[in-house]
Image 1 (cartoon, rainbow, N blue to C red):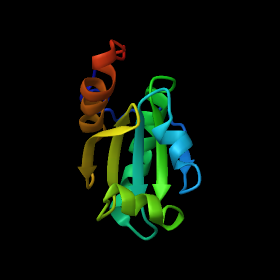
Image 2: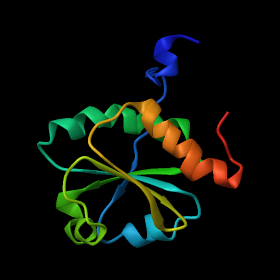
Image 3: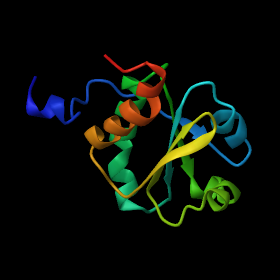
Length: 129
């Protein structure tokens, strides 16, 4: 296993995240049967654009185990306000409809995988292979 693989930089598998809005937030996130990672982003945010490939790779890697979603602040102003989001990018990790972790700013894929493995999957015995 090479260093790029270990860092999660493989680029061989990408999947578009679920689009979240004020209208579908409750259904897609709060009522989800599986844990959810929500990438909250805004137009013109360069760090947000840096995270796009990472979010797509996470969506592919954890397909069926967690739901990966994106919420544009312009389409989810009410939801963003209720969640207390003050800046973008913000990544929220939900389990059973509740926030279990919050990350503000850009991080590497491996960082997010650690949170997914320890806070979302490990507690229910679904650690990824």
